Length: 490
Image 1 (cartoon, rainbow, N blue to C red):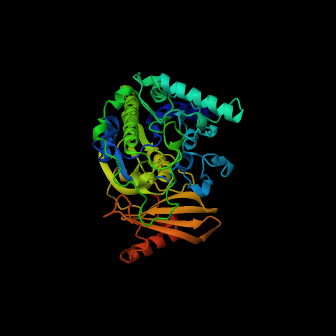
Image 2 (cartoon, one colour):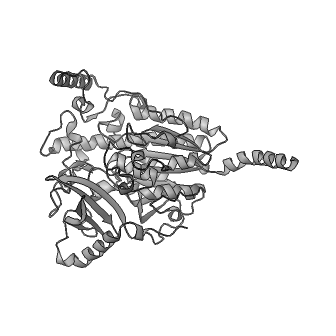
Image 3 (spheres, rainbow, N blue to C red):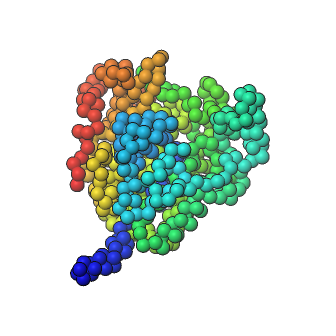
């Protein structure tokens, strides 16, 4: 019995040592952040803190979400399952309705000795997941609009909606203010600035704990409304902001390939139908850029605190935007499609001991790959349900041969028919197949875009004889689905 007690005593001494050797995770999500950043080649954007993170980590140039809208995208990333497995295609379905026992990414870390804490938007609003976290998710309490004239507009719209419906409480969409604001206020006057402060306070207490931590911080901006303190607007000269060079739907694309930007039209001052004029488009782009720089500053504050606490070399940092976003490209705004603008995402990873810090990889990576990658980087086992491939080897060897395709999808209703667009991106092409959701063998339309000469995806080449061989190759890839392109475990 004495030897058993001695073993237990030894293990109790060893446990803090082992915990100290396990890396922390700083998991940063950004809503609607497209890869238009200086580190991605967009030198007109002021993003010094994200750029500095990329310089110390790995920038994944061709990362793709599984569905370009908040809840399905975040669900796929956090469960490691694709939308057809979670059955989450919309903003009102919780994944545990279909996969009740799935172990999420933060839950896996929690089950292996980590404190998992969440601040802001990680899962879609109203659809948080209690088993994922060691403590309740913290949300900042700050008003959306601060300018008096904008507050008055909201009050007027609320009153009008109440008078029309006879209800005391109106739908939030019916009383939204303008699509943008830039009050001359401190960073913490708006929600994301306050969120950064709350997360930093928790980081300090977590740093003092013996247990490793998984700290998840979800910033809302640049999600609509585009609201950021005035000083971030002042970083940009509106006269130099270029409008989208392709304000038209891809030639030859089916009519249902893109959505009609309905999200942005719910805001005051935005036309309910038709095109957004150039003057308003330039203001909207200016506002979006201001929000990007505001979020960059908030991210910088997190990273600076990590350095101050001397935790940078002990922490895996992951920065991701939940999907892309259109700023007038293809004549549309927002996300909700399978095009490159919507599916291509920001993904930057920095890990202790990585051998190729500061490098960019052109390997095809998917959001479902983040879960197994973090398990590998932290030395945790990978659950058997995962539908992605760990990209951890790319942090040491960015040019390593990798997946041959990345897969995305988007549901659409057209003329009473329920469709699903299944899209794949390979080295040179994007191929999208629209099928009847009741009969996937019924192919309603196809799209094929050649990225060497048409990176903006302006010309559907599916019917072009010159691309017949490429179309056949993409069809074969699509027939096989995502499983054949996954790499074998390390």
